[in-house]
Length: 231
Image 1 (cartoon, rainbow, N blue to C red):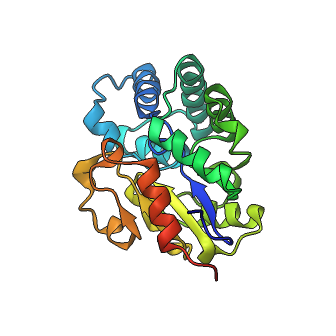
Image 2: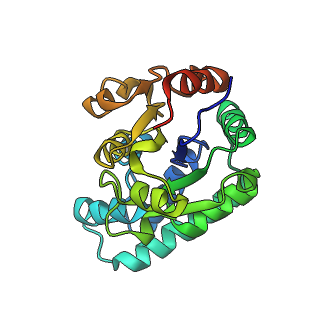
Image 3: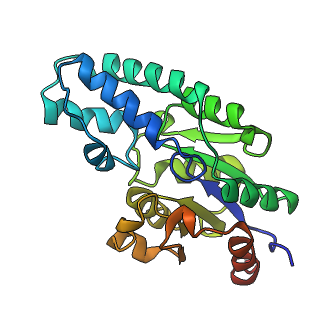
């Protein structure tokens, strides 16, 4: 059994391929503490899962009354995150296996992320995923981050793929919304299984309700091999 021709797969990075959210939380906590906000919690962080770093900081400026310019905050948070990411970023084992299965079939793949391009490249290089995922689109490179479809549409363009023939792999509701808006199928593996009932995930072609703990590379591959047909 193999994947039929014509399919391209676009992966979100953070929370989908790698468990980078703890690093993002810590980078955000440090950044906010530097500006006098000392009570930022993991529960606070969860509100921004799936939203680009820049757009998160726009919301933080309003929520916490931060006076520093957006670009200064962005540079600070990205610097802190890169230090943490280079020290340690864990790839979900079943996601690595899924990427390897797709690569063995020659399926074109890309990463479309709300993180900075530098951060995405650093994580991919540090985990070895850059051997398979060479096409990268950052939200920095498009007009609007998720839930707008821009990053996914740009990834499809760079792959030379038709949106309707793309599958997006996502962990967050804004990403599932973006995939739907782009006219792409979505394989949703919620980072927070408690959010699996979010209406945004209702549009997914396949929803793994239990998140990464329930995700199986072979099961996803077999589903694709049976569910996807040449156009």
